[in-house]
Image (cartoon, rainbow, N blue to C red):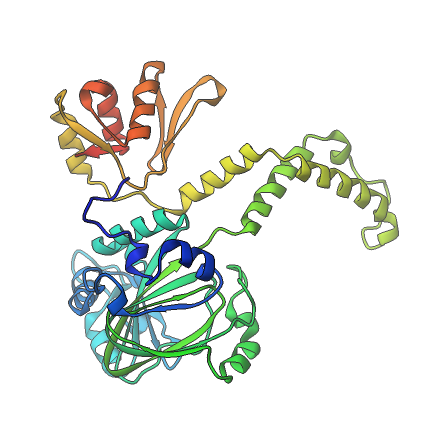
Length: 404
């Protein structure tokens, strides 16, 4: 969806350089520190200290949405949760009473999954993911004065660190394992991380409110709060990689080989799987067939598989069930409707049927629906008079369009 005329692109709020320079010099390659004076505005519209207090004391958060760490160790859930009382007896609800003591004793609060529970961050993360083309998550780290939440480590996703309040001293070191995958955590290389962290840092800087630090995955980092409570947002970017393409290519190749009767045949009677010499001829036959299957893999099929993975990796913009039902009940020919944001909708007309696929699910279409739906997907908005009342109602109740 196009941005309003007065809106600032999400990436422009985070980096003090133009998008082309960021893409060519920093994305996945080099850290970038952008100072508040070079960015459009602070980040307190996304989160502030009052928001943190509200989240942990009034929103009924459960343990998955909060972690508590002290001296580099994550505390067990029972240290900061309790039953919610009459009518809400779930045992793992965040206890603000326990948090007061823990925070006062130097523990760091980690609010997780804020892209699911805090409206300003839901909107911002949705816009940023759309611009980057990669899924984004949001956590907040709230650290007492002169405390360090976690030891030197690296993340398996890129991060933007948005300093919201207070100040933190950051130490950044070069990767010990470049571009780590999600199953290659820093704990697998703990000794190498500790050795690298003892060397002079690439960057040592104090982040003040409104500053933003970009770190590609793999860069070592640790932060210490200075002189007061420090709050920062971390936006984690879970990047698609060339290995993602390799996974889809090999998956398609294996599906293709499953149709080959020769490869489905049993190995010879008496085969000894511990002896390479007995397996070598079969391995070579399979290797040749697999290489050919990968070489001839269909690009459109690979793209379709990645599209399904991408669709499942993110959520569309929030939609209100009550408002949708009210809109559907009060349709007029002049009612304006627009495509729900971040929906990733596409029209599939294979197999002799037409289906609108999106993050809201699948919606079967009649032949007469196809043309107006194509126009909706192209233009992003329409009127009931262009769709017809029946189709408009189905799109509303299918959470595909919203009023506006």
